[in-house]
Image 1 (cartoon, rainbow, N blue to C red):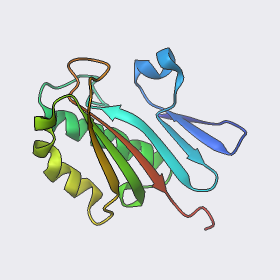
Image 2: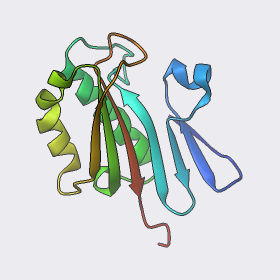
Image 3: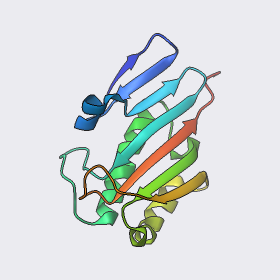
Image 4: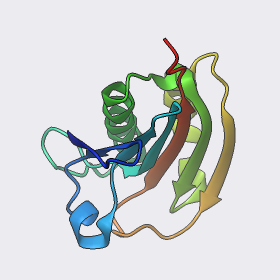
Amino acid sequence: MSGADGGDGRRRIAGRSPYEDLIGYSRMVADADGWIFVSGSTGTDPATDILPEGVEAQCANTLATIAAALAAAGATFADVRRVRYILADRADFEPCWPQLRAAFGDALPAATMLVASLIDPRMKIEIEVTARIDRRQ
């Protein structure tokens, strides 16, 4: 991931998704006041660019992508305040629950789950998070 300061108090981090340049967005934006916005992330393996078939493997890769974006802003899943899950098939949500519970632990963010078509029909899950850290330190 690479980052840049927009000169407006926002730090932008770019990921490896080709959609970032095609559509025009950042993987993560961190505001100077401590708010961190991680764009919807999907299950493509961040190291190999391979999209596994199963939802559980895609969920694991999605969480790894989000963890890296949060870390680039000095945050972890414990700092997440809101999460949105988007799944192509509602039946795929429950198999992901153990991984989601492990990632968020006791943070227990506000959450919404939506069922929608994703940008690539092979994609099964997309997760977006909003976090906040104390920047006064």
